[in-house]
Length: 330
Ligand code: KDG
Image (cartoon, rainbow, N blue to C red; front, side):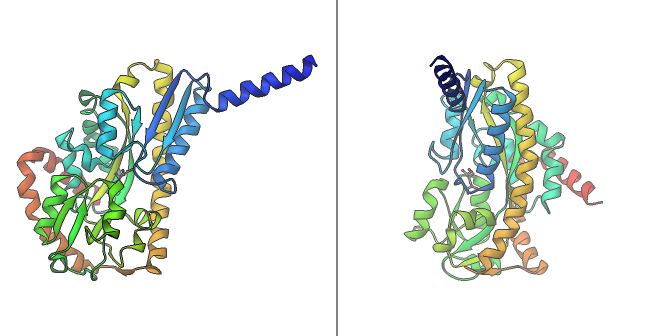
């Protein structure tokens, strides 16, 4: 009898530990994308590492599909300390730290390798270091990816084809200005409202990486896609400063190292998934792959944005990034 009770108690302790009971700290982490996304898969990877390496002292609870709100609302919650973690695109982060607009300049990064080089270098670090003053700690740059255009009206092969199309953008002044200058009729909206806005034809189109277009079933309400790749969207894994300041140093190390390892994992699976889902989307939508000349026309059309936002972002920062990206190419 005693042995049986002992075993039962052991099982119970095990169950409680896996359920997070007894954990000293809980990280509630919320994102906008769904549970099939590379972002959610990477959060699961992060959770496993943190829970294992903290020996159960930290529990990570995951929420997807805007269950805890949109990017902006979750960042506000981090600032107030009512939510511990989120992973927004950098575009809506510009409401908190203006310098993040540098990443929104159209065509600033030619490919993912250049993006990694900038994000993991001094510029990326400088921008992460601006976050604590806003009540958030930037643990690592993960990846959303190059953004592609979709719509339900007609195929888009040139900026002229955008004329009059109502395009949902993220809440970001540069994205709005870029689509305006290309002739579209842009409107900012939270991600969680996007699918039904397209379904109800409140907007004609949107822009997101291939993985999102496929995994969020956007192809059900959008017939046309174009590989514009007009903006590279980084994600930042953010943790509330209020929570961070309560963590002992050894636990901070566990969280930081899991964020760094998950970054490598995230970039790897995200790139694989984006390539794979482009092929799948070709079976479901009319996908236009632009020639280099066609792509150059979009780049040309967006050029005025650089002057328009030079003062706002800071000419020195723009020059610094352009210098680094050109060095990388050599
Ligand atoms: O989880 C991330 C999403 O909330 C959001 O950042 C996705 O790219 C996105 C968009 O278009 O809003």
